[in-house]
Image 1 (tube, helix red, strand yellow):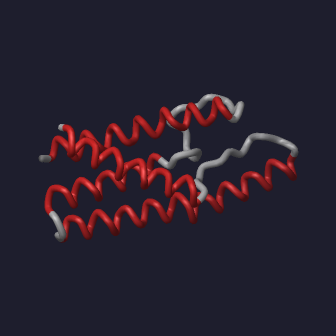
Image 2 (cartoon, rainbow, N blue to C red):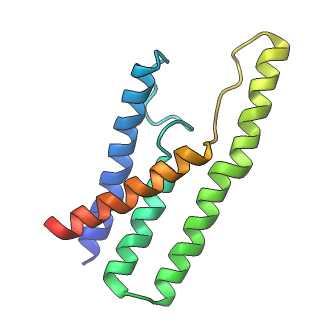
Length: 129
């Protein structure tokens, strides 16, 4: 049902944000929930949960294909384009001796962790709800 798919996406995002806060605390970083960047990628968790939910609901279908293409674009943007922006912001911080510019993208490992989280949460929601 649609209920399980929506629930799994919401849980994956919220769990991902809680994990980000734990990683920030463990690394002695400022605690900033719902901030761009960090481990894991909640963008990737959301689209992976959406793809997994679409697979569970419809099997192989045009909806699944659309979700996978959408998910690939989101994950590629988080890792590719936005990570390049992050690298530029680090360089500006170093050159200008400031901390004004922040990370907005994800490393490949952060995106993969988000994808795994989204799939795992969705499988568990469908198994137990």
